[in-house]
Structure formats: structure tokens, C-alpha cells
Length: 70
Image (tube, rainbow, N blue to C red; front, side, top):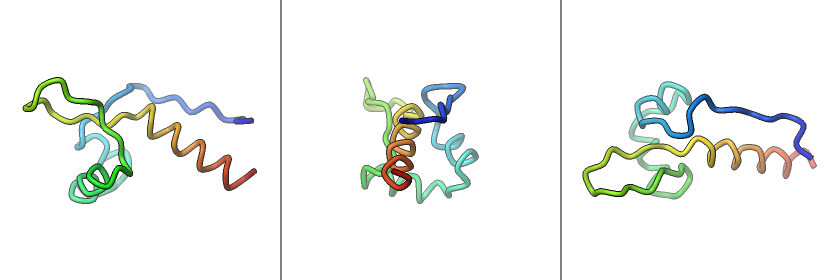
């Protein structure tokens, strides 16, 4: 059972904001997106700016913590 309920103030952030939050360089974020390690919102138009799905990223982190901690 998860005892910590992390809350993101917004569900989606730009790569720039995610870089600021995570301290990851932009190149690393783009690599992680290409590798599927960082999830983005599905773009509705090709020229739309990609947005990192913070809800999904928090969920992944919570699942990894539960797996490690038992």
C-alpha cells in the first residue's frame, strides 16, 4: 500500500520545465523519451510541443518504490 500520495501541480510540463524540475539536461530528456523512459502526452498535431506526462512519471516512480521497498 502506498503511504505517500505525491501530487503534481500540473499534469503536463514542457521539456524545459521537466529539465528544471529533474535537473536532467535537455538531451538526456529527449533520449529518455525516445527510449520510453520518460512518457509524453500524445500529440494531436505534428508541430505540437511535446509535453511530459507528470502523472505517469509519478506513477512509475511510486511503483518502482513499492517494488523496492516491498
